[in-house]
Image 1: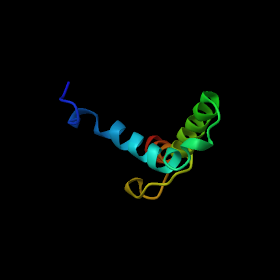
Image 2 (image 1 turned 180 degrees about the vertical axis):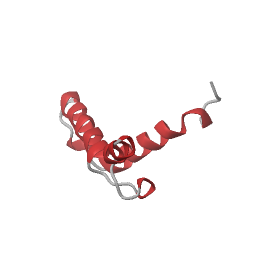
Image 3 (image 1 turned 90 degrees about the vertical axis):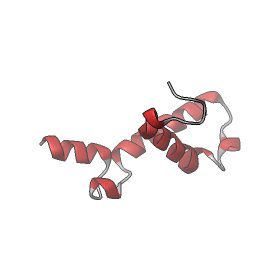
Image 4 (image 1 turned 180 degrees about the horizontal axis):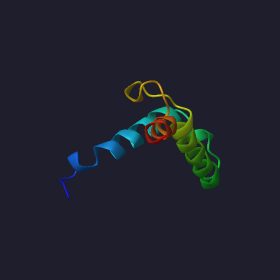
Length: 72
């Protein structure tokens, strides 16, 4: 475990949640009328992030496309 505000051991998840909050939550937080709507929006965003959102680091592929290509 690391000190509060110093998380070198979980950089990938810190990055993901930062992107999720900036692309999906900030500016839209008042549009969710219930916890269920927020939950569904997060599920939809994770699907988008893994299957549709391209990344330059992954040679212009989505994470699922990159993984499929590297194993296939």
